[in-house]
Length: 429
Image (cartoon, rainbow, N blue to C red; front, top):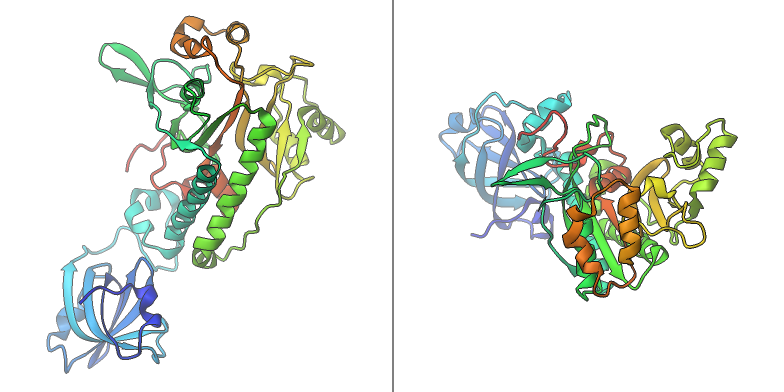
């Protein structure tokens, strides 16, 4: 008989013969009865075993929690059990016995510390609320992907072992690559721009990015999932429109596909209204100054300043027109005032989610930008070459998927939305 998922049992006829497979979450023994709460990825069901049908009740009573089992029986939809549905068992098989004691409790009322949970992530994810986070994450990225496909973007895959820094600076992880010096890529930026030169007008990538930043905060990871786009014949305004609609479509996908998971987490989220507000860097400086926080021109907005700015908005908004000194070499300077750039950050209250900009497409301006940033143009020859033979104007962005998920679900730590986090102290599991 074909396996039934627990979540589908209530849609079957009462008295139907079923087979369910999953983990033995709870086991309770009475004189002539044993109750087993079986859990699979879709829910929980109580299986009731009567001594008349199972002479070897002791084996069943002594079964360790979290053992993997197969139960056959008749469906009872009128059950008053706490799972709301019951299987009157007629057959039973142990597929795999769990060791005891468990290194991490699944239904224990006391929550384990975060390190213990991460060290036993395979058990941690058996908790419905923890698994719900990642089903929501899947729905979120699917909605973003689906929107970009509708906008004629081509999904691409670029190298993660590279010879030069994307952003400049020293935040790079060196890797041993035969006789050559190489690094883990900070972002697909250079390669997606090269693809724009190839004539593929619109590209996007979902993949890992690596930053050797020595942060140890609840908002930073050293390996994260980056959602990147690049689009030809566009500027920063066009890219912002694409970004806000991608986020909106991702949230719509969550509401459509993961409503039960939101219920499990006790969360309600709303579809944001587009377009998102735009506020300039200079306006942000003025807001900060009005609240007693001075930001000298050319310096980044402090955490304190962003809190005051974020208080003015209850949802997503853009900070635009950042100074050239704060942006990478490939960012297009503003034509009217080159102290500024055609760039933006997507924020949620005080938290940054995404950076993006119109890019430099003129090779002469690009070389000047290399000099301004103290970079050696010869290290980027493979990149500059693509600009010499007809590079169209283009723009794009890179979105941190875990940061967006953290904000949507109000997670206390970005590692909660990362299956196997990589930070300064963690490289296993």
